[in-house]
Each structure stands twice: as structure tokens, then as C-alpha cells.
Length: 430
Image (tube, rainbow, N blue to C red):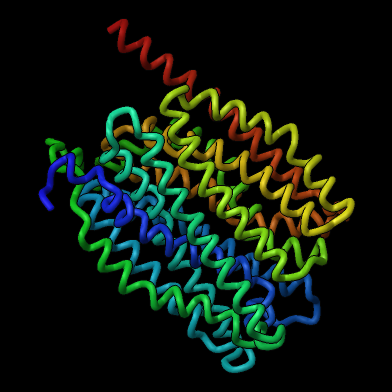
């Protein structure tokens, strides 16, 4: 295939770009789905709550490495190219997944078991710190004029395929294995399947071409220049981080946390919880590209404002209605509503973040903003939600956490677009 702008616009190119993104989210979903079983294997305790919190804290710890990965790997990509960086992140993610899948339990090797699992999560988090940014920037740079929102939305849409696949695999495993078998070894099967997918994804991503925009750039800043530019643009990065809080808290609440919330709080069947999670993934997959395309037509700001306000007004009432009389149908309805809010907001948010970052630090700046939000807020959503319920006695407390995220998204949206107007006015005056 010739290396022309036209050759980079096709479905095949988009598929190659987002393939590794699928693995990144698949690994994170699998850990979230089986947090209770992982707790029993690696974090045994006489207190079930303490054991689960250790497992969820380890899940969240992986996100703490994301900002470091964003800074180091993001600078690497902005300097050396989009293609090389995307291949490197895939390799690192695969190594972390393999480690978690193969580590013996606490009963076999003692305290080394949870430490090795933690190491695997940290490695996954380090690579994921720039995966989302690298993919989003690549898609933004190959997008056809007037369709950037639609193109970039496939970064998030590919994650939903991972949610659906992980959920479907969980349903099959629960239908095939006894609960005791799932707790003892069945939870490892999805991780091993993820490892088997890696060679296929590596071959796909190796065929990527560098983007024309990066190739034709005359000035490629050094690593030191990239870091200096990031420091100079800290206000944009902080505002971008606040925008992402809404996305990352929403996403991990309606996907990774759903099986745990459904089982431990609502006392619903494991299979029912996984079916709901699959439906959420499918719903997200539909809304993300639709709203990305709509943002190309009506603008980013209207969608961002409308759906942060809608989340602020409806999140807690919806979760309160669910916990009042828990059932499969109520869980499904509430999760699909939250999915609509998430997909509508995120369809416009991700492309906005690629547009407000200066080109020279587009990957590093995007990745740092996204990673900070995920590390400080989104990644710990399962643990924070569990703690809020435990400490307040209010089963609907996760709805309050989601309202807080909506406030962050709304304030950041207003700041970013106000700053953008000022910058445009200054340019016209000059």
C-alpha cells in the first residue's frame, strides 16, 4: 500500500491502529470482572471487605503508572513517531498480562504472589499511559477533513469491543465451570486468551504506516523541548485532565465495576451482571461513533455541556432507584442510561482533547491529561465506590461519585472553550 494521505483513510488503517487498544482495555476489564476471585487467590484475609479492597487497590495501582508512561512514552512518540510508539506499548502491555496470568497464588509462593501481580498491573498501566493518546492522535492525524470526531471516536469504540468480548467470555466460563472452579483457576483463562491474541495484534500493528502529518513536520522537537513545552502548557493539560474525569469515572463505573457492584451490593447473579456489562459495551459502541460524527456537525461544546449537565441531574436518582429494588431489568435500564450519557460525552471529548493540545506535544500532552484523570479518579472508581458504600451505608453512593465527575467535566469544558475563544481573538488582533 502506498504511503499517501488517501491510503491512510481506510477502515483497514483504523483497524490496525485500534487493535492494540482492544488488548489494553480487555486486560483492564478482565481484572475488574474477576476482582473478587483475584482477591481470594492473591489477597487472602479473614475480612472479605479488606481482601476485596486490596484487590481493587491493586487494580487502581496500575493507573498510578499511567502518568509516568504518558510522560516517558508520550515524549518518545512525539519525537520518534506514532508507529514505533504504538508497537512498543503493545509489547509492554502483553508482558504485564502474561505475568498476571501465570503467577501462582498466595498459597503457593506467599507474599511474592501479590507483589508479582502488582508488578504486572504497574507494567500494564505504564504502557496504557500512552496507548490511548497514541491511538487518538494517530486517528486525528489521518482523519478526512470534517470527520475528525468520527475517526477519533473509534479509539473508544474499540474498547467497547473488548468489554463485549470479555463479558461474553465470562458468561461462557460461568456456564461451563462451577463457582469453585472459577475462583480457583477459571478466572485465569481470560488472561491466557489475551496472551494468545498478542502475536496476531503485533503482526497487525507492525504494518502501520507513519502519519503524513508527522512525516512532513519540519521541526521534530527533542525530548527536552517536549518536556519544556508540556510545562509551559500546564493549564491546558490540567483543564484536559478535568474533562477526562467525567469520561474515565463513567466508563469504569459502568463496565469494570458493574460485576462487582451487582454481586456484592445488589446480590444479583454473576451471569446477569456480565450480560448487563456486555449490553453496556454494545451500547457504548453504538453511541460513541454516532456522537463523534454529530460533534463534527454541531460542534464539540454543545454535546459536552448537555451531557455533563444531564449526568449531574440524573446519576444519583438513577442509582438510588436501582438499589431501592435491585433486579436484572433495573440494572440494565440504569446502566444503559449511564452508557448513553458516557458515549455522548466521550464521543465529543476525546477529539476535543486532540484539538486543544499543541501539535509538538500532542501525544504527550493528551496522554498526560488522560492518565492523570484515570490515575487519580477513574482507575480507583471501583475501590472508591466500594469504600463510599461501606463507610456511609448508602448503596447509591457511587451515583454521588459520578455527579462529582460530571461537575469536573462541565467546569473544564467551560474553561477550555473560553480559553480557545481568547486565543482566537488574540490571533485576529495580531
